[in-house]
Image (cartoon, rainbow, N blue to C red):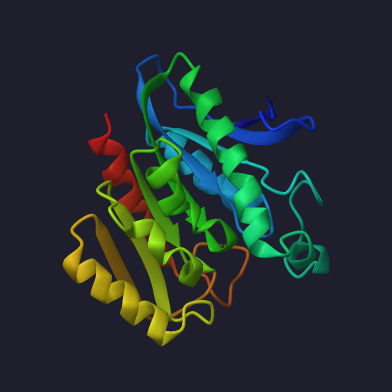
Length: 231
């Protein structure tokens, strides 16, 4: 089980909460900084962080919504959508929080200096923003949204990024998936995986309609492969 720590925002305005899960033992390890969906750092996100820690890695999940409606919210709570609108400015302001979280992680005695980002839904764009501009070594986006606005971030990107969607994901229409598949075919740093019949939110156990154990396992294994490469 992890714990909650406070991180001082470098942009001012106070501190924000971060769920931090540390591996047992004293050896150094890479880290994954997780960008949550609009539900915030809830039991699903904390469980994923705990799984990475159990596998021997540092996992940190900052509250990206501390400026509006902080903390986790129940699925279906209308405040979840409200606090993430308009999305592009909220995503932009969250870049500072992701960078501040990485700075905190780098101060940990257990950290080996390398890190990846993992984004879910709202947080999906940080899978590429992190490696492109925030100093991360790699990224994975799971059922990412808003990715039509971030295609340009892949231009010139050499660090590895993996995107995973289901073909029944309403947030990733066929034309968007096709563009990313075409880009992946010509850009070695990008991998795109599409799972048939899988819906938006497949990583979230608390969403039984969308939860897909096979796709969850695939995404976790991809992240663990990246973290292993960063040792």
